[in-house]
Image 1 (cartoon, one colour):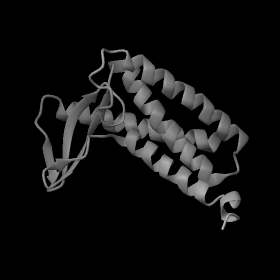
Image 2 (tube, one colour):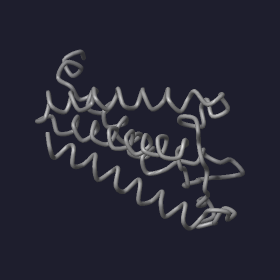
Image 3 (cartoon, helix red, strand yellow):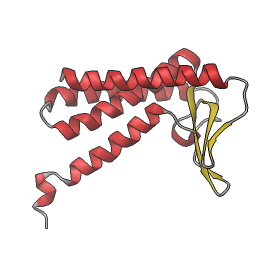
Image 4 (cartoon, helix red, strand yellow):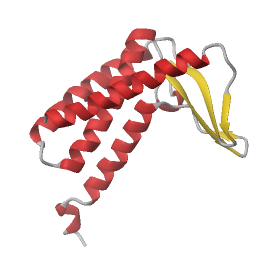
Length: 156
């Protein structure tokens, strides 16, 4: 189980380091065009993914923190119960690290720091961060692992 917790820890460290760098470099600055489809921009998101509930009255900070911490406890329990299911555990570790990275922001500054801005043809994907990327990759791997499970392979 410790290797999976180490992976989650690496995600947290990478997430926090990149957020610190983004805040240091981008505070008070306009978006920085890196390519024709990618900018660095500093955004503080008090909501959840895609700024869901960002305009709520402030209760969402505690709400999303509690949900992320409860999910983290459940994920650690799953890692303990299934340490030899490598793909499953990698996916869980990515989600765990991403969730904890964003929880740190919520607790420390009241919002999640986002700084990666992809765009095309005038359309911008909502800004995100390393933690969000880890959560997304972990979720995709969980679906893939679920589709590969022996129970589903016997259905056809």
